[in-house]
Image (tube, rainbow, N blue to C red; front, side, top):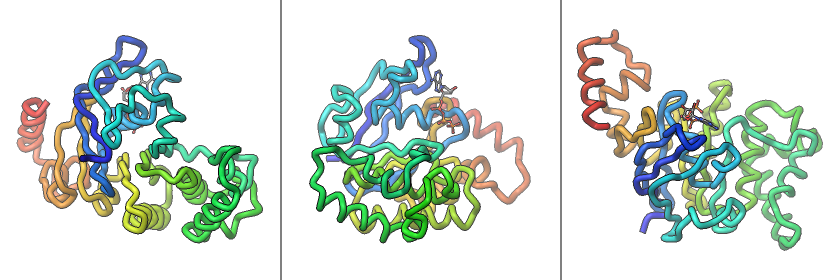
Length: 263
Ligand code: ATP
């Protein structure tokens, strides 16, 4: 059984705008799956449909099914989804700016959490993210972009998730930090077997860590396969990996035609 499966999911905003059109995605147990696509393709909307954060944006899953470990996610409210092990790290590294990293980590736990366990978990986070340990006394608002991203991921890990939905962790970061963040993502996945659904525009970095990937365009999945297969695909190389050759407009036309066929 897959850890997560989306079957033919449709999302509508404001009861009129169809942003996600019949999307089917699977994340296996312990899988690291990338969802790639350009601006506005529907990546964040897919993640919000899984974590349940569409309502605040007047969005709604109007069709399809989302199963997490075989259970119907759409019947659960967002906190219940977190309790089941589904956590969403939103785009834009939202941390509590006036709190320290330690306080941010504590904010992810409930009043009823076992104190010794919370202490153990936060120590584990400072081992996994030594940069955060160095900045332990600073307010999170004064951390660098990369450090804030690490804090957002660490805060999600405090909930002991089985699956992390990661939205654009590399956005706006310097290349060396992108490497560091992706290295951490790989480690979280391999060391604890936590499943990861990674949304990225940085296809090169994502395909380097992911096992498999889906490509979404205008709300539809137009391609999927192993990371290796997608990396080798000429259309992906041209459109998403900054293909080295000059743009061949004849081939682009073919790609468009193929895309229409795929859609
Ligand atoms: P980006 O990489 O820019 O975040 P994305 O692939 O994550 O893009 P989404 O944010 O999911 O794309 O947006 C998909 C489509 O849905 C876009 O056309 C967007 O304008 C629209 N959309 C997103 N949020 C809303 C909303 N709250 N209300 C109405 N339309 C929305």
